[in-house]
Length: 148
Image (cartoon, rainbow, N blue to C red; front, side):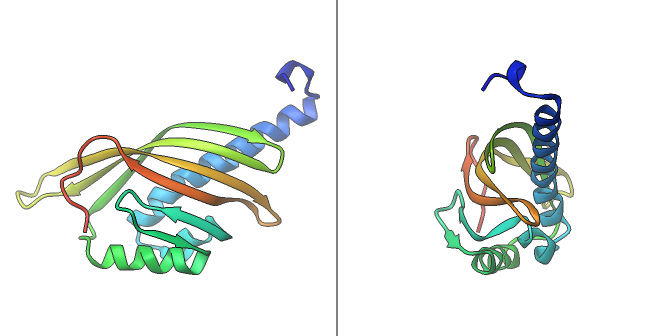
């Protein structure tokens, strides 16, 4: 349905939905940087699925959290996720998004550099607790310099 045929109430709901999803996309990186995996895991649907760029996969909120905990054990804490350029399409109680992301890391010389850029390709679902990530596949578009 074209936007011009939507009622004011429907257009406001669409904007609110997009904003909630956009905020969750931003929270994703910030919560990882803070290493708050409990709050980060709440961004996922209970039956969510995550495919990392490295080929690792997990299904279910608890398994996704465990997978990221294992990854974070191997990575230094000085990592910064940059989430940008969201494209969000809402279709009723489901949505799709693509988000450009970059990861910066402090190197041995003390300088922080962007070590790769990629995209999050996600599907979202509306739940009683709000929008949650139902599926995410990360891609790396520019070469990474190492990710254990």
